[in-house]
Every structure is written in structure tokens, then in C-alpha cells.
Image (cartoon, rainbow, N blue to C red):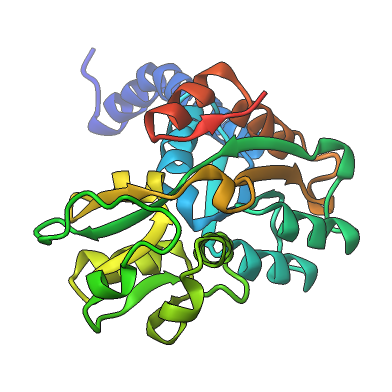
Length: 274
């Protein structure tokens, strides 16, 4: 018996019906899976001191390899970030290079005080451009920093509010040098801006953290400021009130305190505090 073209088309439709239904079921299942994964993923917003840029960036990358959560950063001076948090910025984690600015947000009721911890410590260094003739400097009371500047600028974070600048001013005052160089200070918005000024030759010397100096191949450390010339450089960290009950924020905060994160911080020159 012969089969008309329309009958053949009907048979083909019957034969293909089940496979098509199965394929559609697979597509819908995969789509549902992707939707569920997207629903489980969360964005964590971290406000952190500029000096932690490289270390925290790598820590976040390592964390994201084992998590659906995404970590977003705002890096700037601790003072700038603290003021933004007080004004309602959506930070969920705050990492400061200064106890002073963490105290500021805590007094404003913007952090979960029971999560506050001293995470890291750092050192203060005097840096020069890589090709500078200035080499090793014995940093002590009255050392001839004005001669080394030779009329140029001393780059440092603004000592009115930037932690690295505040520590730098403390060190220079304790060494009886502040009055000699105050008029030559190039006040940068944060420690990375001070580092950048030295790295492009805009200043013959700068005061930054040792971890910042290590992050640039365009500068060299010519001296380390004595630890007793300034207050201890401690980085407190805390969850903000915006993170209360947020599992993703809590998870990344805990990861920042893990041994894996500690290993990365140490690679970038930080001292990890217990």
C-alpha cells in the first residue's frame, strides 16, 4: 500500500515526538539548574584599605573558585570608606588600616561589634624610584631627609586623615623631622596614590607601607621606619550592620580569617595577627 506525503509526514512527527519531548525536558532541567545556581549565588561588598588591594584581590579569586558567591571591592583610604559607610554606603565588610577609623564606624553603630577582629599588621617604609641614586638610608632622629629630597616632594597619604600619612607624620615628628619637611609634603588621597607618585618620578621619596612597596617594580625601599617611631600599624576588620544575617558575607569574612587566606596575606608581606 502506497503512503501519501502527508501520511509520511505524520509518521515522522510520531517518531520524532518522544525524542523532542526528551530534549526539551533536558533543556528545561538545565535551565532550572542554572536558575537555582543563580538564586543561590550572592554578591558580597567589601570596603577595604587601598593597601590591601592585591592581597584581598587574590583571596577573593581563590574564594570564588570554590563558591557561587561574587566578591565586589571598593578600595580607598580607610578614612574615605569609613565616612561612606557612616553615610549609608552598602558595605558588608570593612577592612581598615587604622583602629581609629574602625572606632569611628563602631561608634556610629555601623558594624557588628562582636565580629571586630585585628586581622593584619604592617610596617612603614621610605621608598624612592627604582633608578634613584638614593640607596640605603639609616632612618634615625635627625637624619638628613631634606638633603635627600633636594627640593623635591615627599609623597605620603594626607596626614590629616589617611592612615599611612598619619603614621608617617607620627614617625617624622618623633624623629624631629616633621617641621623640616612639612612644606614639601605631597598629600595623596591614599597610600597607593603616594606610591604612584614616586613610581613615576613625581617625588624623589615617599612614605608607604612595605607591602605597597613590594607591589611595585618601579620603586625600591631605602629604609624602614623604627617601629617605636609611630603607633602600631594594625588592620581591624568587621562585618557591618548591613551584613547582619547575610550568610554569604559571613562566609567570606570567615574565609578572610582562614589559614588559606593567611598564607596569601603573608605572601604579600603582611603579618597575620591571631
